[in-house]
Length: 167
Image (cartoon, rainbow, N blue to C red; front, side, top):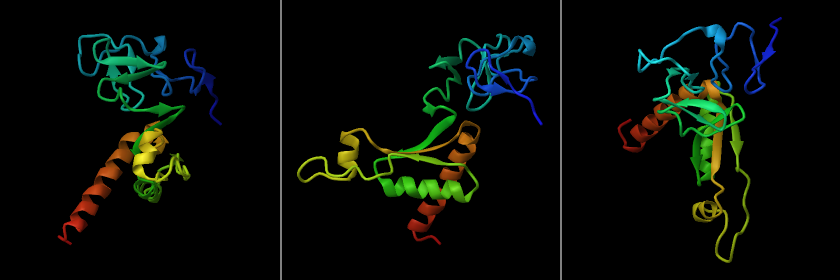
């Protein structure tokens, strides 16, 4: 049975032999001197929690106590879940959710319930959802984020291929 210790930065559980925390991206002293994957002469200051690349001060950023590379700094993260899709169309979000589940991803949805009527003539529509800032969101565990994006891209390209009547 694996024993865990707490990350000294974020308090999440990690293995005792970890060189960095997969939850917050902090590098531990035990990792020794490491260098940025992009700027190979610069010392690494953190590990992107999305792609696991070592980053220096120039190409990494800490957002809400989590470390990201510049490419993934805009990924929305809640606890240990990364937002992989968002839409004001619940049906689109439900399709993405089912595609990801069918490929073995753990998935959580947010704002999938009906929002009811907002005003006379308004209702559970894309316009009313965007007006109250309640789009449907699909989340996957952070380590699955990049694979989930690829699954969505592949699914969409096949869907567009079928829509064009090419199959």
